[in-house]
Image (cartoon, rainbow, N blue to C red; front, top):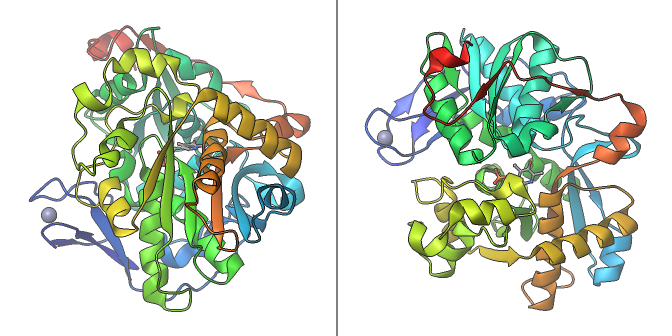
Length: 416
Ligand SMILES: *Cc1c(COP(=O)(O)O)cnc(C)c1O
Ligand SMILES: [Zn+2]
Protein backbone atom coordinates (compact mmCIF):
# COMPACT_ATOMS: atom_id res chain seq x y z
CA UNK A 1 0.00 0.00 0.00
CA UNK A 2 1.41 3.38 -0.99
CA UNK A 3 1.87 6.27 1.39
CA UNK A 4 2.17 9.14 -1.10
CA UNK A 5 2.07 10.17 -4.71
CA UNK A 6 4.22 12.63 -6.61
CA UNK A 7 2.60 15.61 -8.27
CA UNK A 8 4.08 18.07 -10.77
CA UNK A 9 3.71 21.65 -9.53
CA UNK A 10 3.28 23.02 -13.05
CA UNK A 11 1.12 20.63 -15.09
CA UNK A 12 -0.40 18.65 -12.22
CA UNK A 13 0.60 15.28 -13.64
CA UNK A 14 0.72 12.59 -10.99
CA UNK A 15 3.18 9.76 -10.54
CA UNK A 16 3.07 6.81 -8.16
CA UNK A 17 5.48 6.03 -5.39
CA UNK A 18 8.88 5.93 -7.08
CA UNK A 19 12.35 7.41 -7.24
CA UNK A 20 11.65 10.18 -9.76
CA UNK A 21 13.26 13.61 -10.11
CA UNK A 22 11.50 15.17 -13.11
CA UNK A 23 8.11 15.53 -14.80
CA UNK A 24 7.79 14.09 -18.30
CA UNK A 25 6.09 17.25 -19.55
CA UNK A 26 8.18 20.11 -18.15
CA UNK A 27 11.08 21.06 -15.85
CA UNK A 28 9.04 21.88 -12.75
CA UNK A 29 9.61 20.30 -9.34
CA UNK A 30 7.54 17.34 -8.24
CA UNK A 31 6.15 17.38 -4.71
CA UNK A 32 5.11 14.47 -2.52
CA UNK A 33 1.44 14.39 -1.54
CA UNK A 34 1.08 12.29 1.56
CA UNK A 35 -2.08 10.34 2.26
CA UNK A 36 -1.63 11.14 5.96
CA UNK A 37 -2.81 14.74 6.16
CA UNK A 38 -2.20 15.08 9.87
CA UNK A 39 1.27 14.76 11.34
CA UNK A 40 1.24 11.68 13.52
CA UNK A 41 4.50 11.32 15.44
CA UNK A 42 5.96 7.81 15.43
CA UNK A 43 7.67 6.23 18.38
CA UNK A 44 11.20 6.55 16.92
CA UNK A 45 14.20 8.27 18.45
CA UNK A 46 15.27 10.48 15.51
CA UNK A 47 14.00 11.60 12.12
CA UNK A 48 11.74 8.52 11.98
CA UNK A 49 9.32 10.39 14.29
CA UNK A 50 8.22 12.32 11.24
CA UNK A 51 7.40 9.27 9.12
CA UNK A 52 3.98 10.76 8.24
CA UNK A 53 5.71 13.12 5.83
CA UNK A 54 8.72 11.17 4.63
CA UNK A 55 8.43 9.50 1.20
CA UNK A 56 9.33 5.97 2.30
CA UNK A 57 7.50 2.82 3.41
CA UNK A 58 9.59 1.66 6.32
CA UNK A 59 10.13 3.80 9.43
CA UNK A 60 13.66 5.06 9.99
CA UNK A 61 15.06 3.88 13.31
CA UNK A 62 18.22 6.00 13.52
CA UNK A 63 18.82 8.17 16.60
CA UNK A 64 19.88 11.00 14.29
CA UNK A 65 17.28 13.71 13.92
CA UNK A 66 16.64 17.42 14.26
CA UNK A 67 16.25 18.91 17.73
CA UNK A 68 14.71 22.22 18.78
CA UNK A 69 15.25 24.07 22.04
CA UNK A 70 14.40 27.48 23.44
CA UNK A 71 17.44 29.72 23.71
CA UNK A 72 18.14 31.45 26.99
CA UNK A 73 21.56 33.13 26.90
CA UNK A 74 21.61 34.27 23.26
CA UNK A 75 17.93 35.24 23.46
CA UNK A 76 18.62 37.40 26.53
CA UNK A 77 21.63 39.02 24.87
CA UNK A 78 19.54 39.84 21.79
CA UNK A 79 16.46 40.89 23.73
CA UNK A 80 14.25 38.18 22.24
CA UNK A 81 11.66 36.33 24.31
CA UNK A 82 10.88 33.46 21.91
CA UNK A 83 14.05 32.47 20.15
CA UNK A 84 14.18 28.79 19.24
CA UNK A 85 17.26 27.03 17.95
CA UNK A 86 16.86 24.20 15.47
CA UNK A 87 20.10 22.28 15.81
CA UNK A 88 21.29 19.65 13.34
CA UNK A 89 24.57 18.23 14.55
CA UNK A 90 26.23 16.43 17.40
CA UNK A 91 25.39 17.57 20.91
CA UNK A 92 24.58 14.54 23.05
CA UNK A 93 23.69 16.69 26.08
CA UNK A 94 20.74 17.95 24.00
CA UNK A 95 20.04 14.57 22.45
CA UNK A 96 21.38 15.71 19.09
CA UNK A 97 23.04 12.73 17.42
CA UNK A 98 23.83 13.78 13.87
CA UNK A 99 27.39 12.52 13.73
CA UNK A 100 28.26 14.07 10.38
CA UNK A 101 27.30 17.41 11.95
CA UNK A 102 24.84 18.89 9.43
CA UNK A 103 21.22 18.65 8.32
CA UNK A 104 22.42 16.93 5.12
CA UNK A 105 22.20 13.72 7.12
CA UNK A 106 18.44 14.32 7.38
CA UNK A 107 18.20 13.99 3.63
CA UNK A 108 20.61 11.06 3.34
CA UNK A 109 18.55 8.59 5.41
CA UNK A 110 15.23 8.95 3.56
CA UNK A 111 16.96 9.21 0.16
CA UNK A 112 18.91 5.99 0.66
CA UNK A 113 15.80 4.27 2.00
CA UNK A 114 13.68 5.41 -0.97
CA UNK A 115 16.41 4.17 -3.29
CA UNK A 116 16.42 0.78 -1.61
CA UNK A 117 12.63 0.48 -1.66
CA UNK A 118 12.68 1.15 -5.40
CA UNK A 119 15.38 -1.38 -6.20
CA UNK A 120 17.96 1.17 -7.36
CA UNK A 121 21.59 0.21 -6.89
CA UNK A 122 23.99 3.12 -6.55
CA UNK A 123 23.54 6.84 -6.04
CA UNK A 124 25.76 9.61 -7.41
CA UNK A 125 26.10 13.06 -5.93
CA UNK A 126 28.27 16.14 -5.90
CA UNK A 127 29.17 17.73 -2.64
CA UNK A 128 30.99 20.74 -1.24
CA UNK A 129 31.60 18.55 1.81
CA UNK A 130 28.62 18.17 4.13
CA UNK A 131 26.34 16.22 1.77
CA UNK A 132 29.11 13.84 0.80
CA UNK A 133 29.91 13.16 4.44
CA UNK A 134 26.27 12.50 5.22
CA UNK A 135 25.78 10.04 2.37
CA UNK A 136 29.11 8.34 3.05
CA UNK A 137 28.03 7.83 6.66
CA UNK A 138 24.68 6.31 5.68
CA UNK A 139 26.47 4.17 3.10
CA UNK A 140 28.81 2.90 5.82
CA UNK A 141 25.77 2.04 7.95
CA UNK A 142 23.68 0.41 5.20
CA UNK A 143 26.22 -0.88 2.66
CA UNK A 144 24.48 0.91 -0.23
CA UNK A 145 26.94 2.17 -2.84
CA UNK A 146 27.50 5.92 -3.13
CA UNK A 147 29.63 7.79 -5.66
CA UNK A 148 30.62 11.19 -4.31
CA UNK A 149 32.30 13.90 -6.38
CA UNK A 150 33.97 16.65 -4.35
CA UNK A 151 35.99 19.70 -5.38
CA UNK A 152 39.49 19.92 -3.94
CA UNK A 153 38.26 22.42 -1.31
CA UNK A 154 35.86 19.83 0.09
CA UNK A 155 38.17 16.86 0.45
CA UNK A 156 39.22 17.60 4.04
CA UNK A 157 35.51 17.69 4.98
CA UNK A 158 35.11 14.06 3.91
CA UNK A 159 35.67 12.35 7.24
CA UNK A 160 33.56 9.80 9.06
CA UNK A 161 33.03 8.85 12.70
CA UNK A 162 33.64 5.21 11.67
CA UNK A 163 35.95 3.28 9.34
CA UNK A 164 35.09 4.02 5.69
CA UNK A 165 33.62 1.04 3.81
CA UNK A 166 34.16 -0.20 0.24
CA UNK A 167 30.62 0.98 -0.58
CA UNK A 168 31.92 4.58 -0.54
CA UNK A 169 33.47 5.70 -3.84
CA UNK A 170 34.98 9.14 -3.48
CA UNK A 171 36.08 11.04 -6.60
CA UNK A 172 38.08 14.19 -5.94
CA UNK A 173 38.76 17.01 -8.40
CA UNK A 174 42.03 18.84 -8.99
CA UNK A 175 42.47 22.36 -7.56
CA UNK A 176 40.79 25.01 -9.72
CA UNK A 177 37.51 23.08 -9.95
CA UNK A 178 34.72 24.32 -7.71
CA UNK A 179 31.49 22.82 -6.39
CA UNK A 180 29.65 23.51 -9.64
CA UNK A 181 32.35 21.61 -11.59
CA UNK A 182 31.74 18.72 -9.21
CA UNK A 183 28.00 18.92 -9.96
CA UNK A 184 28.73 18.73 -13.70
CA UNK A 185 31.03 15.72 -13.37
CA UNK A 186 28.58 13.95 -11.06
CA UNK A 187 25.87 14.48 -13.69
CA UNK A 188 27.97 12.54 -16.19
CA UNK A 189 28.85 9.73 -13.80
CA UNK A 190 25.17 9.34 -12.93
CA UNK A 191 24.41 8.40 -16.55
CA UNK A 192 26.50 5.23 -16.24
CA UNK A 193 24.49 1.99 -16.03
CA UNK A 194 23.22 1.08 -12.55
CA UNK A 195 23.59 4.63 -11.22
CA UNK A 196 20.98 7.24 -10.32
CA UNK A 197 21.60 10.90 -9.59
CA UNK A 198 20.80 12.14 -6.10
CA UNK A 199 19.01 15.01 -7.77
CA UNK A 200 19.65 17.86 -5.34
CA UNK A 201 16.56 19.94 -4.69
CA UNK A 202 14.58 17.84 -7.20
CA UNK A 203 14.79 14.90 -4.84
CA UNK A 204 11.64 14.90 -2.69
CA UNK A 205 13.31 12.68 -0.08
CA UNK A 206 16.01 15.31 0.28
CA UNK A 207 13.52 18.13 0.69
CA UNK A 208 11.19 16.31 3.03
CA UNK A 209 14.11 15.04 5.10
CA UNK A 210 15.38 18.58 5.56
CA UNK A 211 11.83 19.77 6.18
CA UNK A 212 11.77 17.83 9.45
CA UNK A 213 13.65 20.75 11.02
CA UNK A 214 10.49 22.83 10.59
CA UNK A 215 8.28 19.95 11.75
CA UNK A 216 10.35 19.46 14.89
CA UNK A 217 10.18 23.19 15.63
CA UNK A 218 6.40 23.33 15.17
CA UNK A 219 5.92 20.32 17.43
CA UNK A 220 8.25 21.80 20.08
CA UNK A 221 6.79 25.32 19.98
CA UNK A 222 3.22 24.11 19.58
CA UNK A 223 2.76 26.12 16.40
CA UNK A 224 4.71 27.25 13.37
CA UNK A 225 7.34 29.92 14.08
CA UNK A 226 6.77 33.44 12.72
CA UNK A 227 10.25 33.58 11.20
CA UNK A 228 12.69 31.03 9.82
CA UNK A 229 16.40 31.90 9.59
CA UNK A 230 18.87 29.87 7.55
CA UNK A 231 21.96 30.39 5.41
CA UNK A 232 21.47 29.13 1.85
CA UNK A 233 23.66 27.99 -1.01
CA UNK A 234 21.18 26.03 -3.09
CA UNK A 235 18.15 27.17 -1.12
CA UNK A 236 16.89 23.62 -0.73
CA UNK A 237 16.59 24.00 3.03
CA UNK A 238 14.46 27.11 2.55
CA UNK A 239 12.22 25.37 0.02
CA UNK A 240 11.94 22.41 2.40
CA UNK A 241 10.96 24.59 5.35
CA UNK A 242 8.27 26.24 3.20
CA UNK A 243 6.87 22.92 1.99
CA UNK A 244 6.84 21.55 5.53
CA UNK A 245 4.96 24.70 6.60
CA UNK A 246 2.39 24.19 3.84
CA UNK A 247 1.71 20.71 5.22
CA UNK A 248 1.52 22.00 8.78
CA UNK A 249 -0.95 24.67 7.67
CA UNK A 250 -3.11 22.03 6.00
CA UNK A 251 -2.91 19.89 9.14
CA UNK A 252 -4.67 22.76 10.93
CA UNK A 253 -3.20 22.36 14.43
CA UNK A 254 -0.09 24.52 13.95
CA UNK A 255 -1.50 27.86 12.83
CA UNK A 256 -2.37 29.29 9.43
CA UNK A 257 0.40 31.84 8.90
CA UNK A 258 3.43 30.60 7.00
CA UNK A 259 6.80 31.37 8.61
CA UNK A 260 8.61 34.22 6.90
CA UNK A 261 11.74 32.88 5.24
CA UNK A 262 14.72 35.02 6.25
CA UNK A 263 17.66 33.58 4.34
CA UNK A 264 21.29 34.59 4.08
CA UNK A 265 24.17 34.27 1.67
CA UNK A 266 27.84 34.96 2.35
CA UNK A 267 29.58 37.86 0.56
CA UNK A 268 31.03 38.13 -1.98
CA UNK A 269 29.07 35.20 -3.52
CA UNK A 270 25.40 36.21 -3.28
CA UNK A 271 23.49 35.37 -6.52
CA UNK A 272 20.11 34.68 -4.90
CA UNK A 273 20.33 37.74 -2.64
CA UNK A 274 21.15 39.83 -5.67
CA UNK A 275 18.25 38.51 -7.80
CA UNK A 276 15.72 38.63 -4.95
CA UNK A 277 16.69 42.24 -4.13
CA UNK A 278 15.18 43.14 -7.50
CA UNK A 279 12.39 40.58 -7.15
CA UNK A 280 13.68 38.84 -10.25
CA UNK A 281 12.87 35.16 -10.89
CA UNK A 282 15.98 34.75 -13.06
CA UNK A 283 19.53 34.81 -11.86
CA UNK A 284 21.53 36.78 -14.43
CA UNK A 285 25.17 35.68 -14.09
CA UNK A 286 26.64 38.98 -15.36
CA UNK A 287 24.69 40.89 -12.72
CA UNK A 288 24.32 38.50 -9.83
CA UNK A 289 27.62 36.60 -9.83
CA UNK A 290 30.18 38.41 -11.88
CA UNK A 291 33.58 36.68 -11.59
CA UNK A 292 31.81 33.79 -9.92
CA UNK A 293 34.84 31.53 -9.58
CA UNK A 294 36.85 34.28 -7.89
CA UNK A 295 33.93 35.15 -5.59
CA UNK A 296 33.54 31.51 -4.65
CA UNK A 297 37.21 31.29 -3.71
CA UNK A 298 36.83 34.32 -1.45
CA UNK A 299 33.75 33.04 0.37
CA UNK A 300 34.19 31.91 3.96
CA UNK A 301 31.24 29.49 4.08
CA UNK A 302 32.12 27.45 0.96
CA UNK A 303 29.06 25.22 1.44
CA UNK A 304 27.00 28.24 0.33
CA UNK A 305 28.62 28.59 -3.12
CA UNK A 306 26.28 26.89 -5.59
CA UNK A 307 26.42 28.59 -9.01
CA UNK A 308 23.27 26.87 -10.27
CA UNK A 309 20.78 27.00 -7.39
CA UNK A 310 17.14 25.89 -7.91
CA UNK A 311 15.93 29.45 -7.61
CA UNK A 312 13.71 30.30 -10.59
CA UNK A 313 12.29 26.83 -11.32
CA UNK A 314 8.60 26.24 -10.52
CA UNK A 315 8.52 25.20 -6.85
CA UNK A 316 11.99 26.63 -6.23
CA UNK A 317 13.31 29.24 -3.85
CA UNK A 318 11.83 32.24 -5.66
CA UNK A 319 8.34 30.78 -5.26
CA UNK A 320 9.06 30.03 -1.60
CA UNK A 321 10.20 33.62 -0.97
CA UNK A 322 7.15 35.06 -2.75
CA UNK A 323 4.72 32.85 -0.84
CA UNK A 324 6.22 33.65 2.57
CA UNK A 325 7.01 37.33 1.87
CA UNK A 326 10.63 36.40 2.44
CA UNK A 327 13.76 38.46 3.03
CA UNK A 328 17.36 37.78 2.02
CA UNK A 329 20.57 39.02 3.62
CA UNK A 330 24.17 39.38 2.45
CA UNK A 331 26.56 38.70 5.30
CA UNK A 332 30.29 39.47 5.38
CA UNK A 333 32.95 37.11 6.65
CA UNK A 334 33.60 39.42 9.61
CA UNK A 335 29.93 39.55 10.56
CA UNK A 336 29.79 35.76 10.38
CA UNK A 337 32.88 35.31 12.54
CA UNK A 338 31.55 37.75 15.13
CA UNK A 339 28.18 35.99 15.26
CA UNK A 340 29.94 32.62 15.53
CA UNK A 341 31.92 33.73 18.58
CA UNK A 342 28.79 35.20 20.17
CA UNK A 343 26.67 32.12 19.53
CA UNK A 344 29.30 29.66 20.70
CA UNK A 345 30.12 31.51 23.92
CA UNK A 346 26.46 31.97 24.87
CA UNK A 347 24.90 28.69 23.70
CA UNK A 348 27.88 26.48 24.50
CA UNK A 349 28.25 24.54 21.26
CA UNK A 350 30.46 25.07 18.20
CA UNK A 351 28.78 25.80 14.86
CA UNK A 352 29.83 25.41 11.21
CA UNK A 353 30.58 28.46 9.00
CA UNK A 354 27.17 28.53 7.21
CA UNK A 355 25.43 28.52 10.56
CA UNK A 356 27.58 31.46 11.61
CA UNK A 357 26.21 33.23 8.51
CA UNK A 358 22.66 32.37 9.60
CA UNK A 359 23.29 33.69 13.11
CA UNK A 360 24.74 36.91 11.65
CA UNK A 361 21.60 37.42 9.57
CA UNK A 362 19.47 37.21 12.71
CA UNK A 363 21.55 40.03 14.23
CA UNK A 364 20.96 42.09 11.08
CA UNK A 365 17.23 41.37 11.19
CA UNK A 366 17.02 42.60 14.77
CA UNK A 367 18.99 45.76 13.96
CA UNK A 368 16.72 46.57 11.02
CA UNK A 369 13.46 45.71 12.74
CA UNK A 370 12.64 42.67 10.61
CA UNK A 371 11.56 40.65 13.65
CA UNK A 372 9.52 41.58 16.69
CA UNK A 373 11.07 41.03 20.13
CA UNK A 374 8.28 38.68 21.20
CA UNK A 375 7.69 36.86 17.97
CA UNK A 376 8.53 33.17 17.59
CA UNK A 377 11.82 32.91 15.77
CA UNK A 378 13.40 29.71 14.53
CA UNK A 379 17.13 29.94 13.90
CA UNK A 380 18.17 26.89 11.89
CA UNK A 381 21.68 26.00 12.99
CA UNK A 382 22.00 23.52 10.15
CA UNK A 383 25.48 22.41 11.12
CA UNK A 384 27.44 22.17 14.36
CA UNK A 385 28.98 20.09 17.08
CA UNK A 386 32.11 19.14 15.13
CA UNK A 387 34.45 20.09 18.00
CA UNK A 388 32.12 18.34 20.42
CA UNK A 389 32.14 15.20 18.23
CA UNK A 390 35.93 15.04 18.25
CA UNK A 391 35.84 14.70 22.05
CA UNK A 392 33.87 11.45 21.70
CA UNK A 393 34.93 9.91 18.38
CA UNK A 394 37.99 9.17 16.28
CA UNK A 395 37.45 10.56 12.79
CA UNK A 396 38.60 8.77 9.63
CA UNK A 397 39.39 10.59 6.37
CA UNK A 398 37.90 8.97 3.26
CA UNK A 399 40.48 8.28 0.54
CA UNK A 400 39.53 9.14 -3.06
CA UNK A 401 39.42 6.26 -5.53
CA UNK A 402 40.12 8.68 -8.40
CA UNK A 403 40.95 12.32 -9.09
CA UNK A 404 39.42 14.21 -12.05
CA UNK A 405 41.29 17.00 -13.83
CA UNK A 406 38.10 18.75 -14.93
CA UNK A 407 34.36 18.07 -15.30
CA UNK A 408 34.76 16.88 -18.91
CA UNK A 409 37.45 14.28 -18.24
CA UNK A 410 36.79 10.96 -20.10
CA UNK A 411 35.12 8.67 -17.57
CA UNK A 412 37.30 5.72 -18.59
CA UNK A 413 40.24 7.68 -17.19
CA UNK A 414 38.63 7.64 -13.75
CA UNK A 415 38.41 3.88 -13.74
CA UNK A 416 35.41 3.76 -11.40
C1 LIG B 1 24.06 22.71 2.93
C2 LIG B 1 24.10 23.59 4.11
C3 LIG B 1 23.48 24.85 4.09
C4 LIG B 1 22.79 25.39 2.88
O1 LIG B 1 21.70 24.61 2.57
P1 LIG B 1 20.72 24.84 1.35
O2 LIG B 1 20.77 23.57 0.58
O3 LIG B 1 21.20 25.98 0.54
O4 LIG B 1 19.41 25.10 1.95
C5 LIG B 1 23.51 25.60 5.25
N1 LIG B 1 24.11 25.15 6.36
C6 LIG B 1 24.72 23.94 6.41
C7 LIG B 1 25.37 23.51 7.67
C8 LIG B 1 24.72 23.12 5.29
O5 LIG B 1 25.33 21.93 5.35
ZN1 LIG C 1 4.67 18.66 -15.26
